[in-house]
View 1: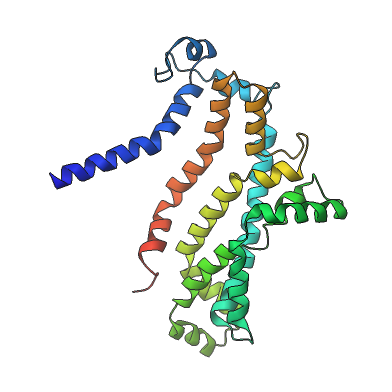
View 2: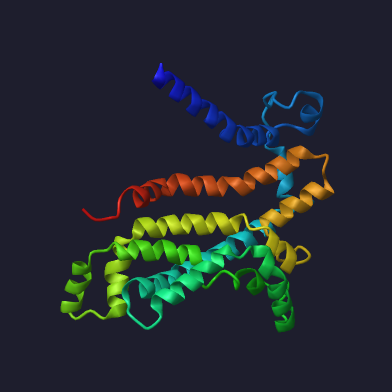
Length: 270
């Protein structure tokens, strides 16, 4: 009975969690006529891809926001990984005056809401003349994030010191130890950080909405929001856009889920 109750609760949780996604996908596969004439929970009959084709047609042109979002995420991901690895290794393994105090002050910036920094960042980027540009979308995030640096620092501190000392005895310098010893054994946590970074910035909405205007540098979240406000009655198109925005993240998680689980359950060493 206890096992049955557990599975029942898990099943209800799965329905509550997956229900909105499945409902959105079903709506995206319906024709506007069927959506307007039948109950919301009715399955698509027959399923159609016309909404997706129309979404990427000349009227809505969702190709450009998809490409811009992918470019922004790729640049931010590369920057976050490189600079976070450098900073985390320095805070974890290098010794210098004020290291711990500097780290905790930097980590305390996690307590500052994003909305507090938007106006100063907007004024700064406007004065620099880079508002509504690609670099305006990536510069606030490309040099690392306190959470990512904290995550890597804690993992790097768990690497046995004997492993690093052996590399030093072989004549390896700091950079060589970092890239040939620390990074290879940290692949699970780097995969986790990569997924967190991609999901966070693929879904980023507020900063792109504030710093860009027009369609040239419009990202997926802003394009979907504009779609809802302009064509509020055409929910099949809106759900098709939402499905397109969610699908890459689901594929990413399915591909790298074992790395995420491994980074949580083990430290990488026996």
